[in-house]
Image (tube, rainbow, N blue to C red; front, top):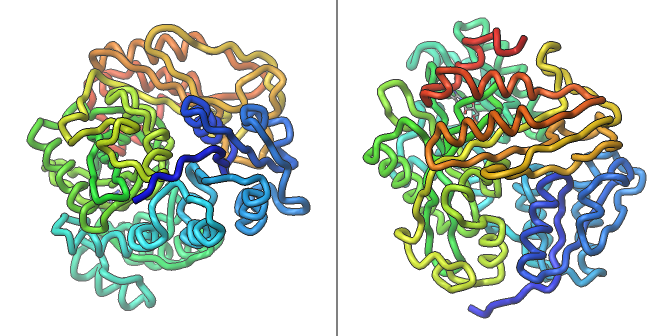
Length: 461
Ligand code: ADP
């Protein structure tokens, strides 16, 4: 296979992940192209690229970044070699990947076929089952009637979780502890998923009480080589959405770590995985793993894996898309043993949300913005400056802080210090809440499961 060296890459995204992509490109000597909406005309991602173009006239603020035809037309006109979709927006849209291919532009991510096999939860589960990887007991097919749901409930017992096949970000999910909740959950999960993802398909899984969320980062090249970059623990969640993530997990024995990484590799090999992806699992109290889904894209929390492996995942994505082998010097992963863990890393997501008001998003102009820096602190941000306007149009992620250290305690202490150093005035943030979590004894012992925040309402005050 020939190598197609990129001269110019577009980020079909906004915010911190667009900037993350531009930084990776600049270091590789690749020119960068940003797109932005009218609402984003003052956003930092626009200024961090070599070229930036306003698109989506007359479209809603989200739809701007979903406009496949317009994005591809612009990319063609500006002689873009490849498009990085980031996370969210078009990142898991197989049609977009196909449209890129048709236009002769490389999509930096898995092929449309791989996206289709893994992108939705129902088909992802089928792949896992075929690959011999345990899944949460659940329905093989989407649920199309109340009767089907009640039959599953009779066989498996409650609690049950209703899940949207297209779901993401904790949306389209309902826990049901009895028949009434199940029937209600079917309707509300389907309508939420229809509204958010344009797809009302739902299925059922047994609800696992107090699981831990363990996910494995993988990288595959276009020549059939795949490696894993070990796991992240993302058990600290609010409403099934990740709040704090870490790598590696604190509680897995070497045998358990090998087991979950092996499951991830089985799935990656089964589909001939290409580019970066994450295979997500739940671990129950008896330490059994269950596959839940694949995210065939870069994830928000990829930074912690970068910090403990020293591997630049976004650059690896670009090199893979150019056609390099993992073992080529351009990527430099000769084999699985080349991936070594060093120390611990933790990521906190600072959001413009008010923890005392049920995490309602807050808006306005940032009046003061003093950041943390120093040993062991990495920041990924987009709206991080005094004078920045926080609008209600997009998600409330403001800054990702990633802290690392040789021990978990070191990383946690650095994170705490970084949070203390931050000063953000003008909009409410969750910094105080993050500080309370990061200093909590259960957190420091690495014992948090996905119910941790529900168990500790005092953290929100
Ligand atoms: P999303 O795509 O919305 O992120 P996931 O399927 O990845 O949804 O699940 C997100 C979180 O929801 C998990 O980390 C876990 O906390 C919870 N969850 C999902 N499935 C189950 C289940 N079967 N039992 C218990 N919790 C679950």
